[in-house]
Length: 482
Image 1 (cartoon, rainbow, N blue to C red):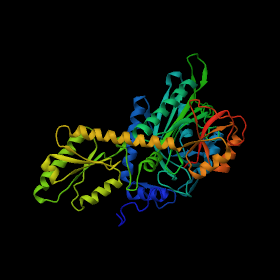
Image 2: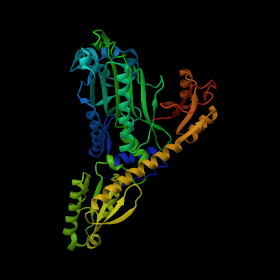
Image 3: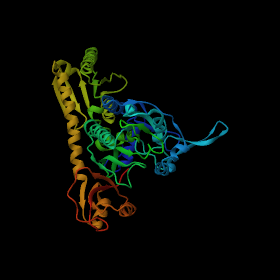
Image 4: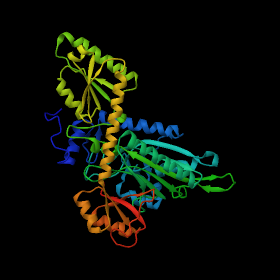
């Protein structure tokens, strides 16, 4: 580690620098030698594994299966869906040679997998008996983001999952879209403690080639939104060019309906920004790779063995209860140094065991979220008390985050007010919109804000569009975003 182990800037003074220092000093990630890429370090990868494990379980409970498809995609496949091709071409990395031999057709390095997967589906789907096809893929994709790399937020390669399903009817596809979005909401709010707004994307902001896109949007401390996940009904826009057809129960031939959906490691960036403080990360217990770190305080040689034994015993009890615990038995560092390191890494709860604790048959608990310190008896109720504290930390984080989300939402009825709010405080701006894409484009060009979501549930409608003052048909949420 460097001499300056801790964070040297305040989160409220310079969020960007705070974030960069935290990602590198907490050993989540490092910069790669190629511009636009990053190295995911073991601690950062363990966070991704927790996210993946939770979501993978949800998907398997609902009969989704994992598969893998090629990294390289023929250019002709991308061209089969014109809007899709047009939307992704500027971001594509191309392979043009195999060794010294020029390829007859360029190969795209996977920017997303719809086309390569749907080519396979066209061979696999023959009858209504083959449906639904429910496949998920855990992989990485590459998109040319080489001008402004920010770990987990914007990189040329990123880890994600992408689901691709095939259905008989639009209604079946609609159900899939909303079920997956609900899984994403549960992951975001109940695991990562990040509250979200749910709704539809506008026609301009939807996934290229989709019939419609649903989204989850979270708000960060600097007033910018982060898209936490999207789920798309692709209609028959891919099944027709890729000839995904099936023989129906009516003996007729029909084009199938497809969906796609995904979340990426951007979830980690949102967790960092929303919960972290000037000491470092604060990881919600349900998603933490290490939920409890036990630090033996060894300064009386006569009690060293007993304290170390007690620390191991407590850790084993916690592990048996399903709690991820770790004993920091490193002798080359002082307890204070360890406290600072584990606070930097955001472990939700620290247990300290020293000579006095040993004498009094107790342990000391220190919460990461609010620094509250408490002593609890080292008895049969210890594990229950630790688990209760972890749940209290989880609840506190989502409560604080929901309050912050609520404070971030402003209403605007006049365009001047809209632009001032964006400039002075950011956040979500709830406003009326006429529904015209040209007006939406103008707002983006003039303010930098986009329509982040159109709520599922009808909200009180503003009388006029915030920009053009024509009658407002929809209430939407605008924001600047990452």
